[in-house]
Image (cartoon, rainbow, N blue to C red; front, side):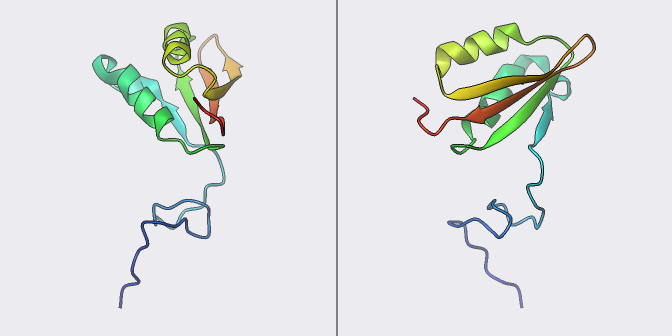
Length: 102
């Protein structure tokens, strides 16, 4: 018999997707895999879905200054942003949603 899935509570690993995997590391999104026409919208969707204190890493083949400027205009002070790698071949940036976002 299948166990019912609760949509309102996190599982023992701290997330609520019921996939059975632990959240041992921050999810990493390689933005080069997203079509250019929808790239910023997809990244914003991923960032906006983060719960307070949750984070993710964005990976790109260039320094995403335009994205960061757009994020600052749209959600000032909502995210703590830390560069993990700064090129020349790959930029990796960690985003953590602040508890008092907006």
